[in-house]
Length: 489
Image 1 (tube, one colour):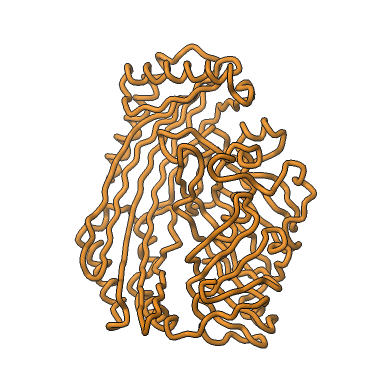
Image 2 (cartoon, helix red, strand yellow):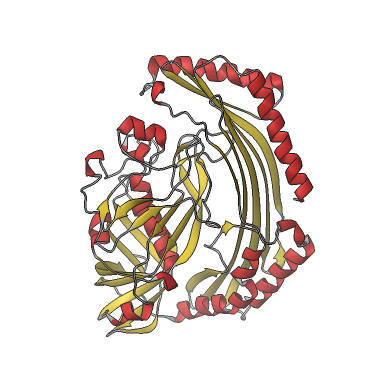
C-alpha cells in the first residue's frame, strides 16, 4: 500500500472515530477500537504456483461500562446508524452483565493514553512486483529439488497490514500501524519407507517489517541445506530412548517457552476463564513472588517494546501503555500475564497484554513477546559440558495437558552429543517432562550472540476463538536428565 493510501486509511479511521464520539451513548465509560486490515499470501509447490490468497476487512469493537456491567458489540457497518445499533447492543449486554456477570465492571480499566506506533519497515511490500515475488519463490522451490528422493517441495511468502485506532470517553487516542512479513521453505524426503520433512527459510521467524525480512530469510541460499537434511534424516538412525541431557536450539525453545511458560502464566486462565475451552493452569495466585519455576538461570521477560519482534506495540487493546517487565527472575515466579482488568480482579501485578485478534473480538489476556534472557555461554561451551545427550532443532509436534503442566514435544532434527562433541544425526527425536521439574533442570543458557528472535502466528485461545501473533526470543539452552525418546513413541 502506498503512503498516500495509508494516509487515506488513517484519515478514514479518524473520521469514523469523530462520528462515533459526537453521538456516543450515555454510559460511565466507553472505548471504540477500529481496525483496517489487508493480507496477501503467495506459495509455489512442486514448481506450480498455488492460488494466491488476498483479503481485506474493516470494522470496530465498541465497549461500554454502565454501573456494574460491561458490554461489547462489534460491527462492520461503520455508518452513524451502524455504530448506533452497535451501541444499543453493547448497552443491552452491559445490563445483562450487571445482573449475571462474574465481576463488578467498576473494576474495568479506563484509559486516557495518547500514543502512536508504526512497525519498522525498510522496504515496503509494494516495492516488489507480484511477478518478482513469485519468481523468488519459484527459484527457491527449484533449488529444493535434489532428485527423486525429495517428494514434495514448497516455498511461501506472506504479508499482513493492520491499521488500528483506539479512542475512549476519557480522551484516549492510540493509533498503531503494523506490517508483518513471513516466509518459509519445506522439503519432504521419502527413502525406503521412511519419510522426513525439514523446514527453513524463515519459516518460524515471522516479524514486523517489510521485504527486508524476505532478504534476511535467504530463501535461495537455505534451500539446498533444507532438502539435504530431509534426505539425511531418512537415512539417520532413530533417536535413542533414555534419560539424558538435552540441548534445545532457539527454534525449539520458541514452543517450549510458549507452551510451558506463556500459557500457564495467563491470568484469565488462572482465574478460570479458559476452563471450558483450553483448560486451567497449574499456577495458582499464591505462587507469585515465592515459587521456584526454574533454576537461577531462568529469566523471562514480557516485552512488547522491542522493534521488529512479532508482537510489539505501544499499548494493548484496553489502552494500557506497553512496558518491559520480568515474569520470572532468577528462577522465581514474579508476575502473571494479565491485563489491567484481570490484575484488578486478582489483585496481582501483570502486564499490558489485553489483546484482541481482530475488530470482532474483545481483548483477553494474551502473550505478546515472551523472551528468555541470554546468559553468557557459547553453544560449543555448553556442548562440551555434556557427556551424553541430544541436541534438538525445530518443533514438529506438541502435546500438553489441560493444566499446562505435563508436556511432550517432537522435533524435526536431532544430533547426538557424546563426550562433549556433536556427533551424527538422529531422526524422530522427542522429549517429555513436567514444567517446573524441567525448568529447574536448566543448566546452561547461551549468550547474547546465540540469541535468536522468532515467532508464532497461530496462538489460539478464547471463546469464540482468537488466533494472535506472539514473539519469542531465546538463546540455546541445556537441560539435565530429561526423558528423551525416538521412533514416534
